[in-house]
Amino acid sequence: MKKNINPVRNSKVDKNMNQSLLEVGRQFLQGQNAEISNGVNRRDFLKVVGVGAASLVVEGCLGDSQNITDRAGNANKPNFIIIFCDDLGYGDLGCFGSKKHRTPNIDRMAAEGMRFTSFYVTSGVCTPSRASLMTGCYPRRVNMHVSSAAEWVLFPVAQKGLNPEEITIAEVLKDWGYATACIGKWHLGDQPQFLPTRQGFDYYFGIPYSNDMTAKQRPQNPPLPLLRNEKVIEAPVDQNTLTMRYTQQAIKFITANRNRPFFLYLPHTMPHNPVHSSEAFRGKSANGPYGDTVEEIDWSTGEILASLAKLGIDDRTLVVFTSDNGAASRWGGSNTPLSGWKTNTLEGGMREPCIVRWPGRVPAGRTCDQLSTTMDLLPTFARLAGTGPPRDRIIDGRDIWPLMAGKKTAKSPHEAFYYYFKDQLQAVRSGRWKLHLQRTTKKSNKQKAQKLPLRLYDLEADIAETTNVADGHPDVVKRLLALAEKAREDIGDGRRKGKNQRPAGLVKNPKPLTLSSM
Ligand SMILES: [Ca+2]
Image 1 (spheres, rainbow, N blue to C red):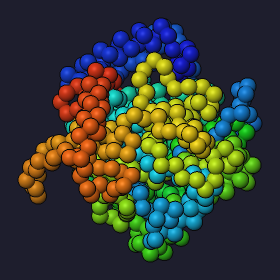
Image 2: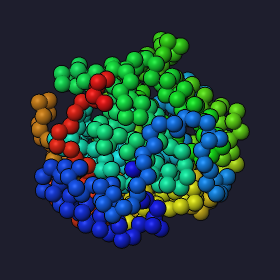
Image 3: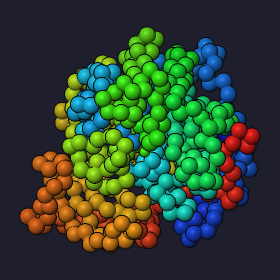
């Protein structure tokens, strides 16, 4: 089924549907299980009113591009590739200061493109971060900030998933004539109605959640599945060859679609722990198994860029390389010079290395320090494709093409950026200032509850968040507190609900993804 996502065409149907969705949202926010297939599903609704009868294409996207009907004007549409690492830290690439990892291909990509040094994800962990990349929205807006059991990510056989009624970056582009593929780790729901093939991707190849979510982690977890489209093709998956196989799949997709616009989303499984690499890279880096995986991802990136050059589509392909959250504290990654680690709201958890490359359009060898986010990719790509973001709902991301194009006067479009940990708003950044809000940490087995004061940091002078300057800048503190209050009202904080949150998808009886399940 295909969603009616053209912003120009969203009118009466959307209004009616939104009323239904608001009802699902109300139920969800009250803690009831809103069954996604109980009659308020948008597709079912569209079926009832006789709209959107196109069938979901899950096979054949790797076929010969000559057989695919081209839309008028496609020649002017750029291709988009997002290479999205898992838990790669701010200081893990040569071009971001790593002395341990050899990343010549990614460093060359940076020399041929632009480094973004204040580029953020919306969470220190996988699921919420990915929800934002896909929807252009803060995780709390789409209720993907926690699992249905209030855990910080989705675990296997999850009740929750990204609501199929959300309009993903893939759906925006697919509706505009793009071939779309997701190759890698998804982590936005492992039930059929939440898989990439139901969220705008013609083709899916990868694992549905994190690579540590095996029986070793929780006995009820099924063998880690590898999916092609909606079918499990291998379980447990051989993780050693994943990066190599993703790369092969990516190049196959690029090659098959060389004559039409395409969107490739390549969320690597690595270097998330447990790290694995193929034989050619194992034991070769100066930083153990973690470094081996980073160097294999560098190889992969080089292969993808080489294939663009070989196919003659280099100058009409925009490639973004970044990570879903910062490096974890214990597997060998680095967030230097930032403080903090994966999961938390210090810069190390949520500021990512980011490189944007598009020969001839993005100036080579430049650095942009303006605040930008993964949420901005949806509106930016939509604009470059010749369309726009959805107009029937709030999108938090903004078009950052002026920054990518290197316009000297271009500034961040964000007055504020909000750092959430699970359901809690913990910090806000505006311009050079970052304010950590006063809060009490939760008691754990290892630590007593601790009261953390209000802390203001000047990120331009103090990127590592070491010196609290709140006392010297009461006016700044006041302004940032007011911005924090705006976010609370809009998307909530803790138990306080925001007035503009939308529901996640929920199923009552989720089933494990196994070789025989589909
Ligand atoms: Ca991650």
